[in-house]
Image 1 (cartoon, one colour):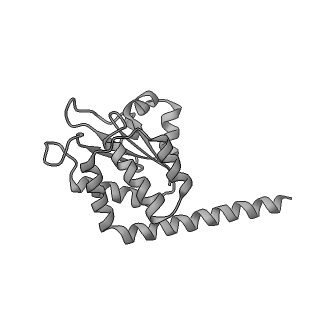
Image 2 (tube, rainbow, N blue to C red):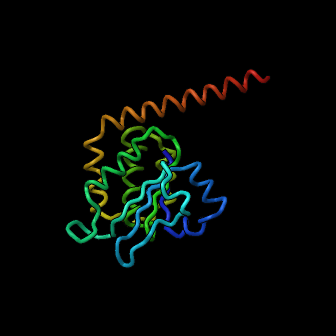
Image 3 (cartoon, rainbow, N blue to C red):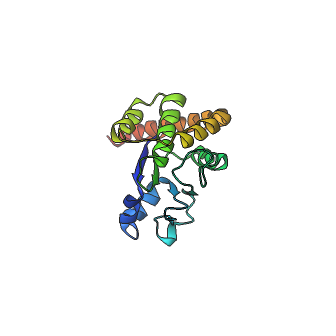
Length: 180
């Protein structure tokens, strides 16, 4: 599974452009916005704010027990969102694209590309592209706990996606052979 972590400026720069439309057509997005310091609205055009492939969350980059920390319910929302059988890449953003989104991206990469299936290419791509992350430990802990609860459902979903990819790959191969 392809997973990308970005700063909110990546999406702010694309707002209202063909690039924003392309991203929303070809990807799923987890948008993590600050509640304070200052509060941030999602960095997308109004037409995309209610897209089915967008999950908007609000929590700050703080530790457990601090005001506006990520909640277990928000971790569940992320797991429910990625559990949808959709092979499109996932973009995750927060303000800087390092801590909150870094923790989410790191956990998703490990869980989907190492634990559920051994996808070395996607796993290594994430590791190389995002070597500078400083993941929020509280966010990481909540997500790992939620993934543990929902493991069997996610395992079944990945098997379906893997089968669909194989069918598409074999279908594309056989149709190319028929053209000759």
